[in-house]
Length: 309
Ligand code: HSE
Image (cartoon, rainbow, N blue to C red; front, side):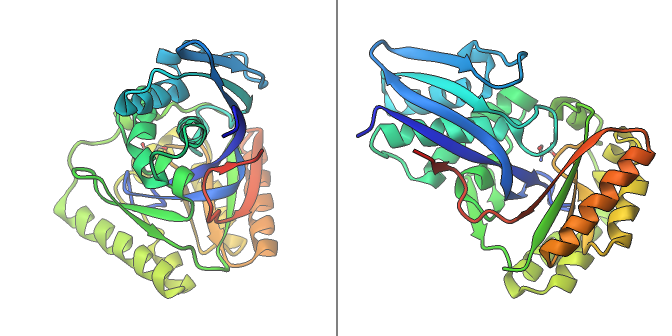
């Protein structure tokens, strides 16, 4: 058993338009990279070798520390670990930065402990990191970060995760306007109740999206990327949202919506060249709206967290 591993856990797109808190998928890039090693003394030590100086290194205030401690408590383990962050997705980006850290920590430590738990069994511990980050232990980022592909959270109590393999031609374009939007804040603005009329539209679209993924029906996937519950409210927090979305659709996207709680937007398409064109159109519209932004183009990552070395 090695004493040290380097782990990659991918960025993720949660909600996927209509599936607020119940659907997400993993990206090929970007992601978090951490080095985890067992230490002689019990307790957790966190180190930061990334470019983000502001990262909390108190294990009780860091999503990776909280997630790993929850796992160790469950296992009744007094083992000590040192987690060094080597590369970090920008916090507050909407592509699962906190989830990637939590997933990497529990996946790497579980590996070093001889894999007492399966990937799926690690999800509830990574969810504790989300509770710290956003006030709610939602699973729609951590589950795909650990399991890869699309994951449907059929139920939270009990936790029932359904993995769905992505259709082979599906590509994702992400544009990340360089503003920080905390998930906790983006959750506070949401209405606690919705109308039956909106619910009917929303669950039609969630079901349509799942059917489209399973049938590899790209037209159905595109038609189902509609969110009448969350997007109308959260889009107001993203300057130029409608213009950026329109640019993605005009460039040929199947559909486009907010990635997680934003400010990133995601757009799906069926070909890498199209996905690059769509990302370029979104980037240039962000620039027209006066925002610096970054973009990523990726197929769906079917693997989830991996040991790099
Ligand atoms: N489902 C969560 C939300 C995802 O929308 O608040 C956050 O990335």
